[in-house]
Image (tube, rainbow, N blue to C red; front, top):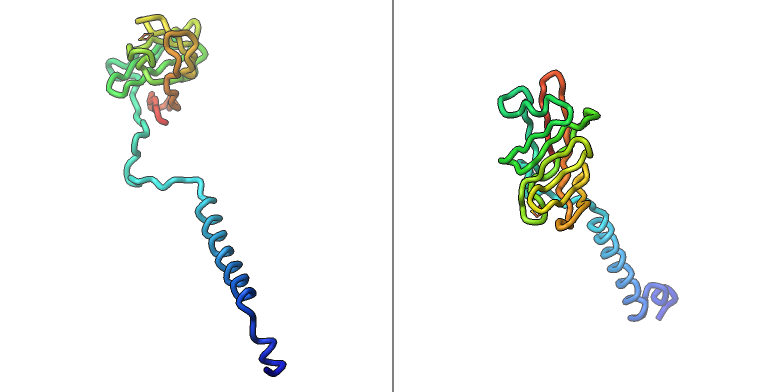
Length: 155
Ligand code: FES
């Protein structure tokens, strides 16, 4: 074996090391690419899935309670209660009590929600504050557009 032949040959152990390193590097790159993704693709990209998003006109018949600070409205079809606080901010949570599903009411003086069935209360952001209910109402985002008298609930 000439000197050139010696330098161009590698033994089986070195070959396996090099292949192993290359394979490991490829696997690491694949993992970094897929593990780095934080967003799960939307299976229904043209729709909004389970995300709630609706708007109401507070001048429309049946919605006028929201024209007054401290007023509230249950949108039964969406299972959402919207309240306009005494400070003129807007809040919305799911309207079904997490105990047995009774529709909750808004109490403006204490800025919270009361279930009339067994007396559970929930904070303005939906957290259960008095049993028997122990889990929170779902909180939604609310925006109010004054020039169109429109409340949008989404989240
Ligand atoms: S249903 Fe609301 S406290 Fe029981």
